[in-house]
Length: 331
Image (tube, rainbow, N blue to C red; front, side):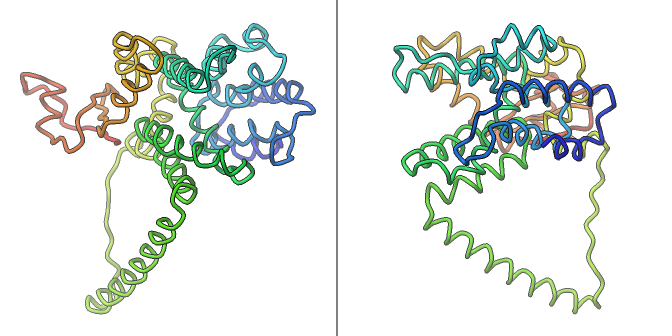
């Protein structure tokens, strides 16, 4: 399994690989003997989550946390042991991903409590949310092995919570896959109709395209998009591209607050219990908005459909001439 990861890690330095191997070995010992519902060794799950994040060129603490994300929740390992073996940065992410014990809570209260813990931790370190999204994506890929009665609520949560969260963080590829996997479980008939329509329109488009090519003499029409290297990375990988630039705990906390923190902290102040927090934060986080990053990597959140004028006034309320003339955006 380790070989799978190393094939995806050419962008990591040698010291990073040594740290990642330490996390792999720790997770391997912790999960030894455990099996997934698929019958595979449990370690295949954290390895798959780490692999998903490697495809997006996630930073080292994110990758290490992906390998370790279930060791406290599903084994005898304590969070203190994780902190002792690895950086406090990693242990905080793992702690944010670890569910609280249910105790006497109802199923609904337990779920809402864990959502509050997850998002509160993500408000301070957005990598908590990134790892959780990758975790849910891998679980969705193997959803067929779950009992039918659990598939629909699981897919529904992926569609209405995790996919929008991925979109808010600019993780477009993960969002698209979460939506594509969830839809057939929630409405198989409608999904089949949509797939058929897409295939039909694709065929029509191909025919029209060939007709246009013939009329213009067979020359290919080329659309050229000019992007900076940073802009392309942000467009493709969202917040993960920014995390590669942010190294200090202060800068990561600032970025996390800009992405999620304001809405989450406001919900915490307004809500009187975990259920109200869940309702308030869901509306605040997942209403239709766009997030714009200035050349200085400052995040601005505007309503969907906002124009360049809205951007100018949000970035520079009095519209002074010194306002930035460029922006990077993902919805």
